[in-house]
Image 1 (spheres, one colour):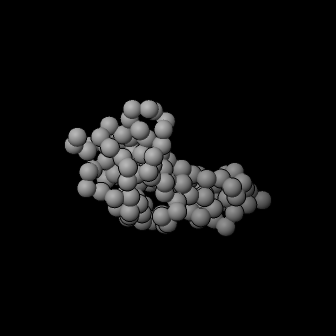
Image 2 (cartoon, rainbow, N blue to C red):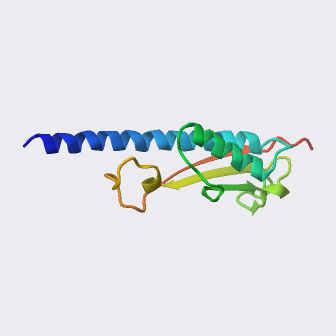
Image 3 (cartoon, rainbow, N blue to C red):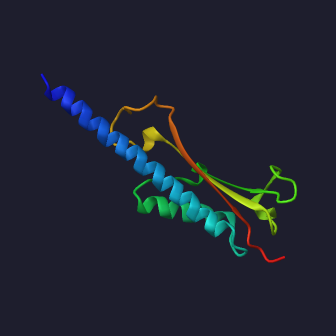
Length: 130
């Protein structure tokens, strides 16, 4: 009688732990991508590949479509432009998003509905030499 409740509680703890772990992996992956993105010699493909490589080391599978890389104009804040057009003083924003049901170990998520998305964003200033 107690066993089903106990097992449900154990699976809930495991699922919550997995959710926190994946969130931390996404945060670190977006940070590593932004560190590559601020360098003068990098391309958008390099940023996305670094994010994918870092996440795969934590056993989280991402695709390039899960990663968004944009440049934010340093002179007029919140004005977005393509990564290729980023100049000195612009901010590089790397966002990584993944649906939780893709990274869950259980067939049905205990937390939220199937539309729950985990995401992380890192913004760093471009280091291009003027």
